[in-house]
Length: 531
Image (cartoon, rainbow, N blue to C red; front, side, top):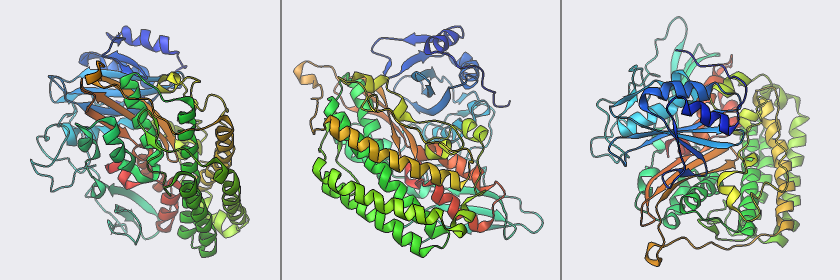
């Protein structure tokens, strides 16, 4: 079975009609995922439905996950399309389901995770990699479901090494201040022949820990699923919980979230610039970028009380409001520092030469793997969750905070490290512009009260939320019981999607010393994948 080619784009109504022809039933009552169209798909037509959706232009697989709150595990696929999100639900009666990654290659990482956590797998029995759980995870190790019948196959190791190639193990401890991540590099000494990753060293069982908590109790952990995307992951989680409860924050609180989100994008892009300089051996450029990074982090602390913006997002609204005077006074200078460093780097031939034609991804690769964020936009795909103003954002009194100021999506067409760097620089300038507009429109720290069962309110429901992190689209799905406590929460940071693209980028005729440069340009986290 091969991946399908996209056909002409369809509207939400046409997608629903097409799925209805395959036995799909649209859910409109309290059983629906609020914030998205929900379709229940019979197991026998799941493969055909996936074919139909994967083959529709403008539609991509955003996430796939399972839960076992019913009599049988339920498989959910989240599809992003031009008018919002669509969630398909399928009960898996046995321990197998169709090999969906053969149709939509973006599903492979989730197939591995679902097998680890719930013990169900694609029917073909194809090899699945170890993703989140360590090899020593025994029967008492916390899981969301039940233990698989046998451990993952480790399809990416060992390699058969031939000729002059050899396998170079690198990690998980690589250098001070860098996340634990194991590289298995197959190289001939220069060219990278193959690469695989072990990311389970950073697994903390975040989704398992969220169960039984209220949304307000859970936000502390949700922010820390990927600390460098605390605002984005926190916003997606809060939006999912708000959708499940049928509430929405005020417009001023939503703009507060947006200010914090753009500040998060700014400091991450500055940090990625410093990492690129370090990877290319430019210590002066690295120092200049790190000065800009430090100034931006100090702006965050002065404006919101935390360098990494923890505590801004609160289910129902915002826990802190920005100091608008500080931002108007300090942000231009901090961004100017980044711009000066970037201009100097762009005028340095030895830096640009290392970035051009390195770590190339094509538009087709990005589309097939469901890549997001600057990685996807550097291949020409204008994928940006800020453009989606339906669903949870639509519940705001004045709509999405991004519905007013039009977001200029920065794209490039090279698909290499240099293109990704250009996208980040363009996005940094756009973030500064958006912050000024949000401040002018007014921000506040207020919260819509969450429904409480004791007050006669029903807390149960499911919801989908999203945000655009510096790494790309973040998705969150939350199911609440009648007491308003979490029975299942799914967090999908942008890193989950883009590590798969990192593998392909490293194999695109690169040499051994290109790998750190490619990693810096992707600017992903192992913690976001392993959670």
